[in-house]
Length: 379
Image (cartoon, rainbow, N blue to C red; front, top):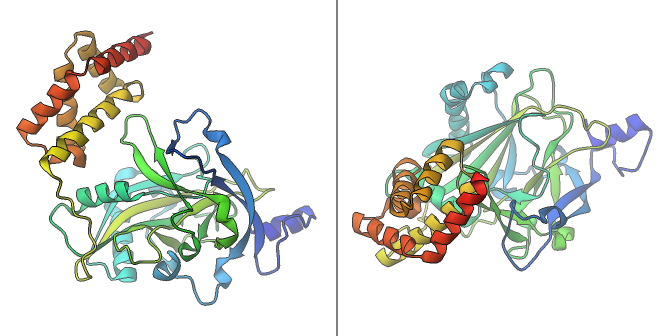
């Protein structure tokens, strides 16, 4: 259902909708403040503002909106899955991942495609992300590139999102995904660094969108998306010359049908293009920089101790209580480097690891912080 249809149903014209599906819709932007923001900010709710912007029916766009031309593209895609299959993570990985990978290869010409994450959204399962954002800032994308290539890689890499309905009962009626034409974002003014922190997981650096230049932005949505369609958009492109490196997007919820349960899946993947000119970041890091980076990462991770999962937190608190700070650091570095493959730790030599442990454990102020934090958690 489009906003125009909702207005006609309600007998109103407040939406400003037109017969071709174009309308005006409020987009939630991030306010600029002279510091990095995160979802841990106590005042994060006051650091956004909502701006009415023209919302265009992308189905009527002429010329057609494309992945390279605008940062997103609607494509036909029959996934061969039933709605119930999408509640089985293993089935998604075994059956859906190969199908979506093959579709992206045909669409982009990628030599290799590797899905790495998916998220099923529905009411009561995952909230709809109703703020203008792009999921990967350069640091997060580069870390992902290092983990995903699994070998020295030269060429071009793209982080791509495939978003589609999983609802077998009909087309999407509300909570559509609005896309901002990537060629109309005002870089670098539009890009507000935002750290997305989730308990028990690594912090992901993203971008939220500054609304100060909203008059330049061109927003689109695809009404009535069906099960046989997929919205493909770029999250990051290693080629700095591309005009569509990042694509801002946001869920939009039309009034009158807020209770509609949109059921969708988004799948993130990396696509490799080895025959294109090399634009991959240089991952070589001087040894001294590795140590400094690892020290900062250990302190950051332990500073989030109260947000760790139950088993990890219990293990860490036990070591803090016994003043086994070296064992705590060594255990975390091993887990982060060997299990989670975090790039700050994967290249550390044994000698560098011991240097990191010595520096962190020799910081009496940080030891006091950990003890205080442990007392707060136990209370």
